[in-house]
Amino acid sequence: MNLIGDLERLFATSIYPLRVPIAIAFGVGLVGLLILARRRGWFASARRHPGRTMALLAGVLAIGLPLGWYLASPLFIRTELIEPSPVGVTGATTAAPSASVSPSGAAPLLTGTFQGADDFHFGEGTASIIETAPGRYTLRFEAFSVRNGPDLYVYLSPDSGGYADGALELGTLKATDGAVGYELPAGVDPTDFESAVVWCKQFAVLFAVAPLAAT
Image: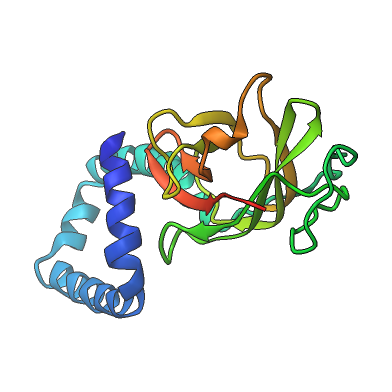
């Protein structure tokens, strides 16, 4: 599966930025291939052996369609979810005037802004860690949007640059757009982590990261 991840990273960093000239070149190449096939009689040969041709076509479609749908459907499938804002602890500490305040009215302990891993894997919105009860915390996404993909999970990472060893898995990505929350397990110290991450678990591909800093 790492091969697919490597191919996706190659596509995102090298091919996607050049998508327009590549699409033009592909179209020209496809026309040239059809002309070559006609001149060499490939179409006539296929008509002379319909059984063999249909068997080959069926095999290609049986493999290509499900795989293509799994990999490509997230490009145009979007989901949206707006969860209620968590109720934060407000009485213990008064936030500084410059500190941002969550929709719950409590100043988040840590906050950051999402950015995509590259031009293709876009990400936007904010990530905040809010104390909802003494010693209990929630990771909250607001005005959030990210490129969809297969097998996406949310992590807290000890590396501000993205996923790293020791990252804490919080669950599957609930939606590509909206405002959602993820409860941290009891006993977890949120200051041990430096970023919130959206990560393709199956193919080991970073989609978006929000470096976290104290408010």
